[in-house]
Image 1 (cartoon, rainbow, N blue to C red):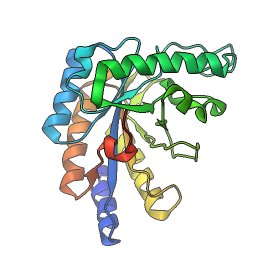
Image 2: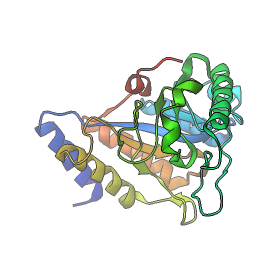
Image 3: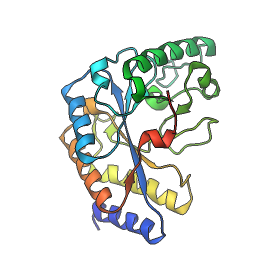
Length: 245
């Protein structure tokens, strides 16, 4: 059985159980209106699949956000502040909560001003990392929800994560390949169906338009076509988070 056939079978399993398989789409690192970003936005419009565009506040330009329907906050400046021995993060252990919250509040204000009603007060931290102690205080910076990578684990804030990263960051920053990507999709869908992870959290696709190769673009196009033809629903991020700026 091909990977695409396996996906069709998994989606059929959901329908046979009287359930509707749902997915959602987040793309990171938006800043300037590049040809790649234009292609991303055009793909969302043509496919009818809603996109959550995670933009870097201190680098974002108004025209890059103008065509987006939903904008999340991708850190503040996407600068790695990790100390030696720490994994990449914008929010290192050495930075006080007060300093981090000051940065976050200023970044939220700037991005909200650029994106207007398209902005959702949702933090998608760079490298999907933020220290746990800071999460509960995010509302102090005007941020009311969180989006990271992996099955959500009860952060205390509304959280909707991604589960399928299309890029092999340690292997040439290229598309992970159709089989690997579909394997991740199938794994999370099956875990949800079996109750191994939160079944209410939609399966999240994480893309990075700036580094997409031809294979990544083709995969997204076919994934959208195949899933919608099989009765899957692509969730609207505004409804997922149910938040207002």
